[in-house]
Image (cartoon, rainbow, N blue to C red; front, side, top):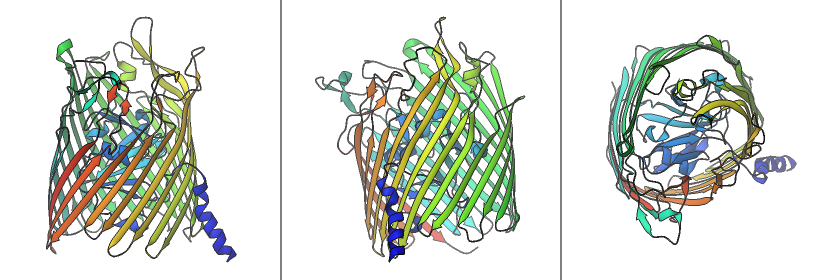
Length: 639
């Protein structure tokens, strides 16, 4: 009796704290309990021991919208399918890595990634959100976390076809066509996605409730994306894998609340490709891969006769050797070369180059009873001819009881200046130092699984201390220039609670998450800087989400609620955007006949018609609706 009481107390202990989760366990990506088969809903977040995996089934919303509605990250955007950047744990978008099939694709020119161009809910890709620093594993820039996009493997031999179409308010349209084919010799997947929106929603003129509503102008977007990935199995231990992703996007830049006209627009063309050879043996895994990325960005404003274009080519070669000495000891070696060539008329030279050569070594230990796990990764990187700070990631996990897991993490982090920081004209600063600092985190997690009931509760506390923070500042000559002037301290608490109940006919899932995050500037080389000890702009102190889903036979219902706290828009924390609530309702009905499956989905976003802003002076859409239809045909055979 006494032992049962202690277990119950430890299971509920994190409930009395106020914050959220994320966190990592072993290098195996083991899904938790009832989440092994995602619900046939519009959007489902799968909780894993290592990450949050985002399932879009079917693709009623794009990835940026799904992240904003279901996770604790901060998305800065101004409309559906519009430009969107990702911020994790109070740090900037330049501190969040974008990984594609294991290759870091962070834009070398400006250091950020446009989340609205990611995946679009592609059937051929898995999309994962990882919290926490991983600079030793993924390179500079992965300080706060990463968004990981990887090819989705095909397990069953046969032919799979999917056609999906979604229509929504404000001229929203999305179409998808998918085909997948697999035999015992390999598989091939192809899909095409098209997403468009007029974004002509109504908003209050000048943000004043006394003013009349007017429609947003110059907000049209059109995104086309083509994905293909495949694998050829030479035998049980050798295989060749590869993939191509091409995106063509046209986005108008809408007017702000205080503008009457804006004619500017942006065009993006992106190509991602990779090819890798893998050998998997009992105690040895070898990987050799190469990736090529191309990015063209054009900005134009016909009314002001402004035009700029920039092109970047990126080539990455990676070699990995993983040796398992026993069931308890693993050793990993990674050699990677990352070369970037940028062509822009705003640079000191028409062409600017950047080359990184890095060596990564990792050691993993697992106890015989699998109750203790430890991993340390070391990385040394050479940028052109200069050594960047030596970094490491370390994590230790201990399963104290059947229902209780403890974890501690720490590491050294870094981020090198971007090409824009170094060579932009006017203002580029070739003498910039790399950002460097430390990260730390501890976590307590409870899991309870009995019969059809599952409960998971996680509490974590994280810290990031970053020196040489790069900031663009005005000069006496009338232009801006980047400087290493700040020391930034981000710290916070995260709490996540997951409840699930599943029978043969019914599935009920509840997830609640909360984040409390102070991200402040500790010091500045400038005297009497009003930003000292103030919250960084656009980073809320409080953020929370609640998701409730219910499935009965072929019917599904999901409700997601989000709260985003006040966000400051001036460094002295005088000006701010108010906090807001949004709610989103999702309904689905699935019908099956032989090898065919038809799903009808209805979604209502911003259910309460809240008036809110993600970027200052740029209103977001009010209540809007989406209707989606998806048809699947799965034919299996043995070959």
